Image (tube, rainbow over all chains, first blue to last red; front, top):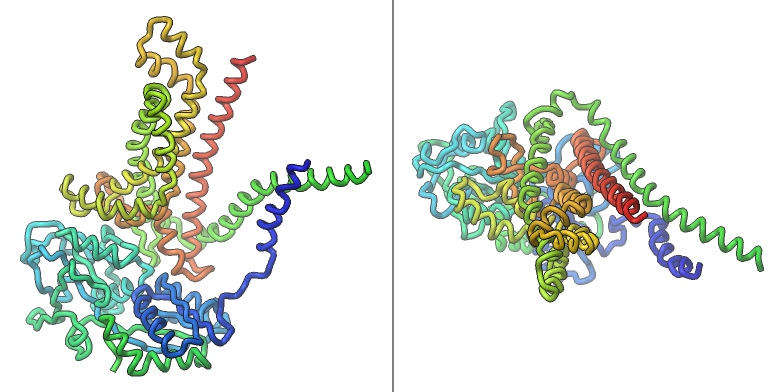
Length: 289
Length: 296
């Protein structure tokens, strides 16, 4: 009997916390900002938060990733102040936000060029968008059809939850044609992280991959791309993305619930201002002009 | 005084009973939640789509077969690697190794069980995947085989320690009897000790393989996650059910068709693990009964 008694406090400890009402992680207190979403934006968002902490130490900003969809879902469920997204919000998401009393407000905070990458040992240096599309849709399966070595092509992609995946599908594989229903070949590797893509493309001479410019490491080779088979073939850099000659770059977004107020507004104004945009180019992303 | 004690007794009894039932209650609650969240998928999506060969949620293609196949082939591979190796290790530790070696080996095997799967996953994609690609001359090293080897490494400690306990529980008189009849050490192990510990060893295998089916992180990192069915699938990328849930659950809005399909996958996984555990524990009970019969 005594023995059972000894366990009582333990059991109570386990049960009681569950009874308290769930805390809303939405930062209603004015000095804490939660910022959640796109993995493409997470490094940039962290750099912003760290730099901003020096400017206004009274604000604490917590940044986390998970994917653009995660961020937008959190915004809809009111568990984050700012949602980061590497794609624009979908009409369905706007609808479910409105059903939940959330009015998503869009800010374009930076631009990102998408680089197509191969192993440094691959002799291919340039491709047209049509060729990249054919590779990923499964029409081209050997490097020798593109003038390379006789090797099978291993297609590497981010997971389907990634905004980068969706952007690549719409703008490269379908070449911006919204009626096109081509999708990734079934044997495309779907890797959960940018690091996974860099490590696979970096060590496998058969592989081709893509990722945001800010995530491409020197262990892989960037391919020069062109819309037109006649060229010119443009290397992905911040400069070519800025002047619009590089064919695949996209906007990166932040969403808030309604017009931002207080500290969130100050923070977003700072991001869109010269100091925030300097952080953007420091990290290899493309600032908005 | 006496009444007080009775009241006290009743309260304690009640609490203990609640604890006992709670385990069942939790499992039932989880299952009901899964059914509620996942079953509508069967109505919302045509069966022909669910039985399709393509999993690509962006274009609402929800074919579950490649995911089932991926989980199956990786688990099958893991079983092939881990069962012979695990049982042999258990036999070595329990029957062959000298006492001091046994005392060193056992804790080490148990430490192996405590390795976080993410660590193994990292080792897998940094070391094992390139090695598999170059030695087997495959297009990529992120294959079902790589996942199988990692899962085997994860299932091994479970198999070894449970099987070793089962072998240890075989009465010494069995071995003495066999040896007295002139059997060699190997004959004793193969014909007497192992068959006597059979159900315990089978339980070990079931628990190990059960762990392999449910494993997520390491598999997600090394198998390439391409949902495809091919006869030589072990040597090509595969996508498991667990990796699919882990990778996609964050993206979906609750109540969405995609969300329901992910829960449907969870139901399938739950049923598979449930059946594996059921078989394992029924074997354990049978083993106990036989031991009791022998003693009486």
